[in-house]
Amino acid sequence: MTTTLLEQPRTGGDPAAVLAERAVLARRLVVDMAASPRGCHLGGSLSVLDILIAALHRASAGDGTEVVLSKGHAAAGLYAALHVSGILPENPAPLYGRAGHPYTGHPGPKVPGVRFPTGSLGHGVPYAAGWALSQRLSGGHGLGIAVAGDGELQEGLVWETCQVAAAQELGTFVLVVDRNGGQNDGPVADISPLPRLAERFAAFGFDVAEVDGHDLAALTALFAEDRTAARRPLAVIADTVKGKGVRAVEGRPGCHYVTIDEARAAQWKRGIR
Image (cartoon, helix red, strand yellow):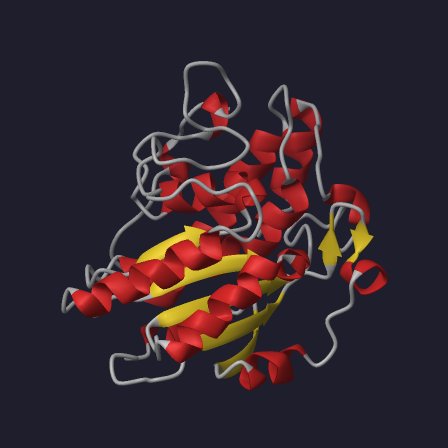
């Protein structure tokens, strides 16, 4: 699990191809982190990767946009996305979960590119909304992008924040739901179903977009929209597959948290394209 040239972010070339390459490299890094002594939240890290890569691409424009991974247990995905996006210089995979290094199971501000600590579900959503409000008050134009899980929507703080964001007309607040259909204890639909989710957000006063959460072109286009004049926050419902990219675990509840050996990691990485 040493750093190689292939694991370094590339520059130049077709933007769509660059982002697609980053997604492949990031998935391989997440699999490496699953092969660490403690393993990682593999399924959710893989489902959210394309969302994070597209959101970080928007943030790279330097307009003050901040990306907050509210589903902090997918930290491995965030570290991988930060690395392949050129924000995190060192390869986090060999250091993940090891004493003396900041790459813990939930992200904190000791990691380059991470402004807010997240882990307790729901808390990253108000962080991002607060960031959007601070941008408006300071005359900035950046977005506050919160990336949450669908299971995380069971937290009341999420909906309290939505209510405040709508009341404050925070058009630069973007809440992205990584809707992979699973959570720690099983399918979301069996635990606390979320029917008519788009209608729920609309009722809270949000603009709503539904998108394939693995379609980098569609995600990039959404994040690139100029929302400085918007008066309604934006909810992006991104349909994803838990464990996306690793055929052996795609869509399987058991991939929520995984610890594997390096031989299995090598096998899985060969299949990631």
